[in-house]
Image (tube, rainbow, N blue to C red; front, side, top):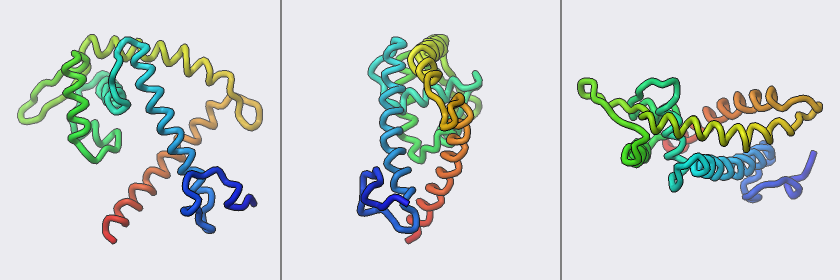
Length: 175
């Protein structure tokens, strides 16, 4: 077993004898999260829509998902965002750019992508295919095969770990 001194972590003082791997995971998650945020903003900029934050881009894709109008609360729930004000601000920015629009159904407001928003998402997909998916094809798993199945396993693990972090956040709030 590798000693804590040889682990790649950002906060050595948090490394626990009971879960040393957790510190490595958290550092990897931090680095990956920041790289992903940088990627989505630059991908959309390359698709012709510059100057948006990563949250703005994620909200645009969430609204466009399955071509169904969504409520603010639904977007927040899917993206696991607690602060609705952040998502509401992103929606207003996207609306101002003509990428999303809102409609009322009774007291509820529903958001959907406009033609321009759908076109932006399609151009994003094209840039993603050219820059990211193409590069992913060059990666190989630990056994030399395609990495797709490993990424699917990792995605399931990340979703499970997000539940643990959510539960831990609730527990910490009650302390």
